[in-house]
Image (cartoon, rainbow, N blue to C red; front, top):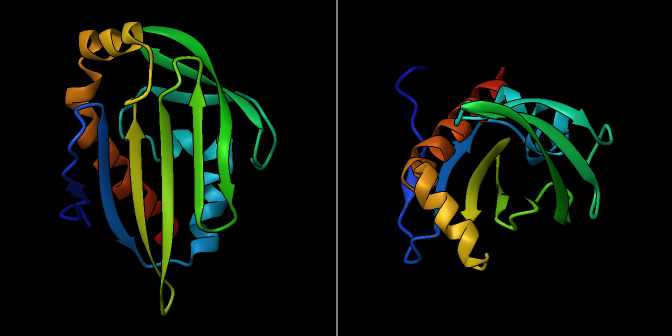
Length: 157
């Protein structure tokens, strides 16, 4: 399974990234992982998400959850679910207002196409500066692709 890759999708906006993968699991199986903040560190391709600190067992529209993170130094970040469509789409953002979104498309026969988006196109200038300064925008396509590969391995196990 080490040769499995997600497809990095082209985007026009330099503050958006996306990747896609097909997973041999139902949308419900995958969505259960995405809606459980305690599972997020298991499929984080960036290596920055360490653990859930607080939040509900299962996310819902408007739910908040905090994560233990580390980019050079440990910190905590609080996220809010801004889109929640059962087994189809989930999106959250934090104080800096960039979003992570997962869209699930049922392909039938127990397969699901999963597309992950990172969108920082509508954030304040200072936040854009931070993303460039930290190199996040340069790394995000690869990190998102790695997250989807990890999500695939967990969902198919």
